[in-house]
Length: 448
View 1 (cartoon, rainbow, N blue to C red):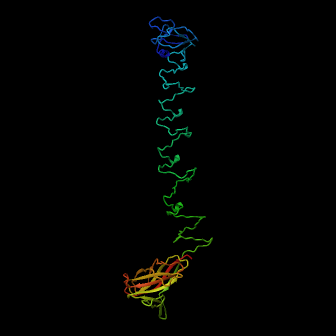
View 2: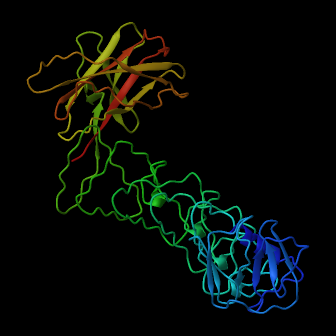
View 3: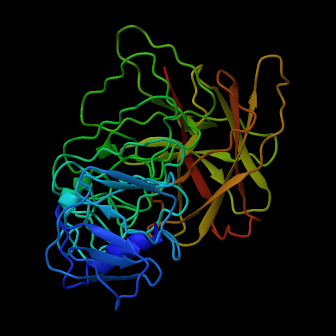
């Protein structure tokens, strides 16, 4: 068999070798320089050489089959002739059929028609490489596989991932850019064009989040939702508003709800809610009848301010004189707090006068409250003070005030007591004259 293969290889380089159905091959054990049988192309089975004796031959053994064990050096010295249609059976190794060819073996004879083509790879058993029944270009690593050939036309592209079964990746029937992690997915590509944005939440099925068809700011808990955005503009951390129905406001005014403790309010089905009402309680320091004056408030048995009448050209009124002498001169009064009192209290007016045109008086106020079933003699809260300077003109009226009066221990519908004082020993009291009290006014609020 080796000799036959060598024969085929040698045929490609022999100038005189042209096989045809009428040109048989003869195998001999003979020296090439010896006798030559006419009309035969002779192959020396010992030396492995091939030569010819004539340019034309006559077919011998057409269609015949000659069996022999093998073709090796030193054996089968007798000439064997194979003609067209004949074959050599090589001890079960297969059949060699003599076929006409000229030069390189063409495709029509089972060749490649190319002297520079070789197939390597199979080493143990017959391997079958299937080509289509049509002219085509064999795809190799020598050139990129184009898109038209089912490739990507890029030597730096690779797909990884599937490991167990066929996975299908569907691309559109149009030219497009494949979105990868190498660049941000833009808005036009269905992304957000931001590498620091992520959506979490849905875990079981598709959820739809609808955005407006306009540029806008997404509202989050990172900042308070402003009034213009439909919020309150205040970070109401841990605070909630629960609505069981619709809430509608009208009018372009500010609405403020102030609560001082947990509050439950039941609203009527119709009507107008009353606003917070401010009440005032006024006291005249003294009253005078035909020149005889009496205090308008309660006075102690000692260090009581004296009631004095003031007669003007047009007016008459009484005053209480708080002298610039040692001692705590004081008066007291009381009134009932309203049922819906809100808890606020101010001494809005301390109206007084003095003959001095310089220096300041220090007025002091102490408070206490008495409820049902309590003693009528409670201890007063600590004193609050106000320092007020004399006017530059003698005996002009002068107003002072004490805001946010202490009401510790007081509740709505209780009796409110106050003690009004001048103590000239106070460090800030440097009015070197009598301070005449004309009147007091208290202000407090209620809801009804």
